[in-house]
Length: 368
Ligand SMILES: *Cc1c(COP(=O)(O)O)cnc(C)c1O
Image (cartoon, rainbow, N blue to C red):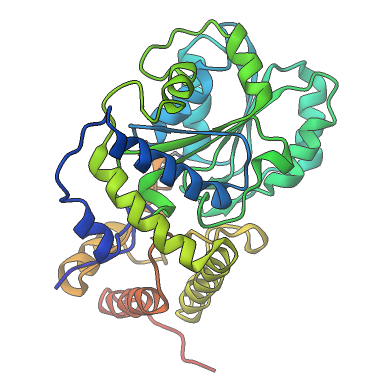
């Protein structure tokens, strides 16, 4: 039996996507590849709600986050890094690594960033760029991205807005053009129903202006080269061809379902997951008002060791959950519900969590 893989990425892929991965290689400088990359780029567009450039890179989410930084910024640029968890911290660290002057704005884990507080922070600093996480996978929180972007746009300095939407895009609505996001990045293995290996960057006009003046070192992750080659139906370097086969099939499925229905499915299933866990007497880690529709973080109940829960679920219940990251190790467990996810996947996972917890001595409250 295949395990119920309920981590927030890499996520399980539909059978027809898996089948497509074993297709024979093609010439990545030939007409078949040009048709393929054009088709998938077109089909990404409605899910990313953009008329701007969509670049497809071969790397994981962290790679495309690095690309967003090195293509738009210069060393000693002033950057406000708004972090609500482990991935927000990572974004700031990348900018710092390349010599940006990073000011951290950390929000208590489990909460979202407050637009008014962000407006005030941006007004104070004369920043060149603001880094934001749309959906913080480590805490199960979705930031109010539209309101945060609006708050940032009020500032005189008009900083660039770079957004990590790795675990939200494709599942939760995100509108880079309408919300004024200059670079938005996401990764294939989260919400896109395909394995790890590809990432996507939506690059807007202000980001291209910044690219012209940016002096951070870059070679592999050069957006300009990617745009130039895309116009010829190619990528600068050999892409993950097999993952593109998978993406082609996944996006065909997603096009049939449509963006609105896909987003609605994620919301409905997330709510089903949250209710199911709460019915077990468990507490969500995130504030109820900002909970994520792609990943649920749950407090490990007193008297239970998070590692024991994960092990028992894996060994006895064929259910694979994620533990807590960084400071949350052992304190929370996380269930992913993004990409290819149906009600039964979540009902099974919640039931397994209940059984495993009972076996570990946790008293499930009686239903009232
Ligand atoms: C998964 C993830 C990333 C990138 O992780 P990779 O392992 O490099 O793909 C970045 N940000 C968020 C919010 C994520 O969930």
